[in-house]
Image 1: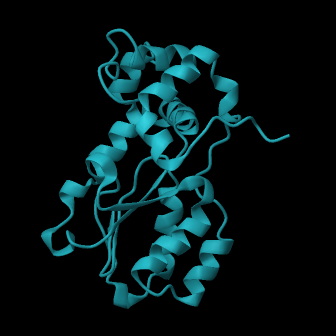
Image 2 (image 1 turned 45 degrees about the vertical axis):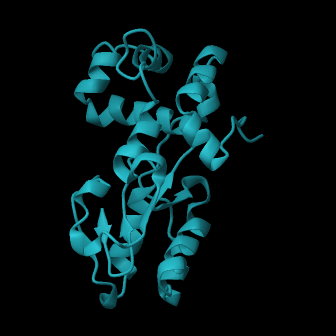
Length: 205
């Protein structure tokens, strides 16, 4: 999370937050009074001095987010939750996600993981948050920052030109789903699909 005089940026995992961090750390003017908190701090940890400021963040198509999260956990993180639903990392993507989302899975009673993450980090229903889409991050970052403060020319240029940060090498998300899992994710993360207008997309030709 980053605090400024004009807004608070909440870093939702796997939604391009490292790109935002690079922009802010390299190009935020001193007058913005940039402060870094714990990387994935939630809205509850925003100091009272900054509670009234806009909360900015990014979301991502849930189909894509789950694939990115799975590969990150598989290669680097190995969280207790992931190890539990993946049989200690032995299961593939489809089996792992079914274990999480169905039957006695930890996510079966309520929303999917992305919806719960967004609500936990930004507030139930996203009230008071201004959330862009990772898929159009550069344009949305310029818009979100610009709604709060004038964006310096050098920062605007960097937003348009900085190479992507911390990118993954997995295939297009459509390669990882069968029809059943696709329907399940669409149902569990309906608030995110509906709020942002996300849909299933085939890979580019």
